[in-house]
Length: 395
Image 1 (spheres, helix red, strand yellow):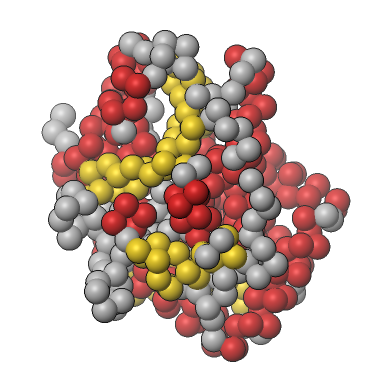
Image 2 (cartoon, one colour):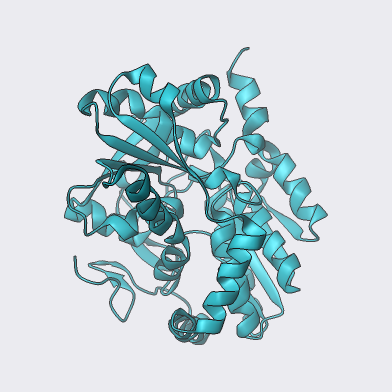
């Protein structure tokens, strides 16, 4: 595969930089700084230190033998990002961008969050690097993720509720961008996924590729071969790009991205932007987007706050069109079944986001051979979702 993005941040027809003039300088400054730190030995040594001693990398690659036995075909492994400090893969990116913001001389970070994990990880990085932190969060998400709101405030962050639009992640992102435009001189926008204007999609992918690089080393050490399948949930798409990217050239490794089908992709209550969307512009990028015939952004729905987003990272759109990654959609109900299955068979409670990937196993595993290896990126743990799970699952 050719190296992407190009110099202007395009993944084929997707990506780019659709931003107001006031942000051009900041994006150009950030792109230059990102290119510089990729080759900077001191920066990378410092980042490795924080990822290891502070965040808890490397994370284990665990063979879920009970889960595998349940299906009776294939070997299922879990990349345990849920074991990281703060409970999800988000800390990989926030520590890296926090270091970068410090290098740029910024005093303040703003962030958006849906499930709250990126907000908690941003507030955590702000503590480590001595930065002020403001997190924008939709009012609906604040209700269903109240524990993470409390954590952010304990960490010293200001959490600003967003009452516009759907009161979820899309609207929180809008407000974070408005803040950045207003305070661009002293503020870094710590974007949480592989979305937004160039250089964010490539930069966040780079910082999350530690997941796939570790996975590659670990599975070769454990089994001597690469997996038949990689699977991860896709909202904006950072955990999935993080595990997929180091394997893109390995044509025998099939990759499956799992979107949120909500109440069903044939209803109006889902967040399956690749499955049901079409190309459009949102939050500074061109990508697949849920929109009506007039180009107005549609409301997204998912039981998981982290997948409740009406678009997706532009590289995912490119990978969909190229056929390199297959994208499927899993309903709220199927995700809850996945949560229950992993909890009862392995004693691991996943966040509702990766529970969507687990929820696809009943459709994937019958297609596998007995020795096929299937790796799921378990991107976060389920603590934050206990209130939602209690409403839907009876014990």
